Length: 186
Image (cartoon, rainbow, N blue to C red):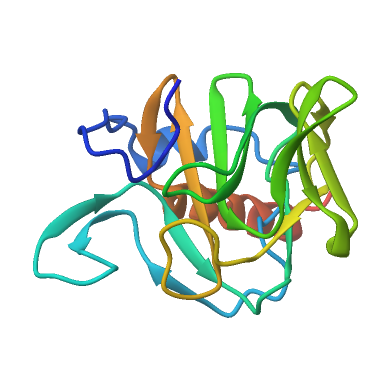
């Protein structure tokens, strides 16, 4: 399973429209980065982030935050991959039903701990093992600059049934759900 958002071969893009995403239940989900500052690169085609004049497809949403800001798990699930050997840098992938959420460019490294591949960020107090269950909102890493990056940020990628989805659509649906709940408390 390649979850590297900078893989060279084209990936499938989900044909999901915002109304389909909004139909999902987002109660309990978490915004993925603390100390968020700005969106720095959207999902879709862009000029190469590391120079040149070529265009590339960006399979995620970049969320700038100060170096060391904590990254939170978006949705409860199981850690299915930890890695530190791709363009994604130190990364964690969580599976939640049909969804995969990918967190890239984190601080720390991967090593085997008690027989399990584990992402370790000792100075941040984070240890996430492959196979571990993680609740929504759990701190799973910190913003770093590992892999192919030009500044501190979280690259957040989402897949639904194996197809990439624009994370901005999900964030809009989460926000709309919060506004509806606030307007109609029960």
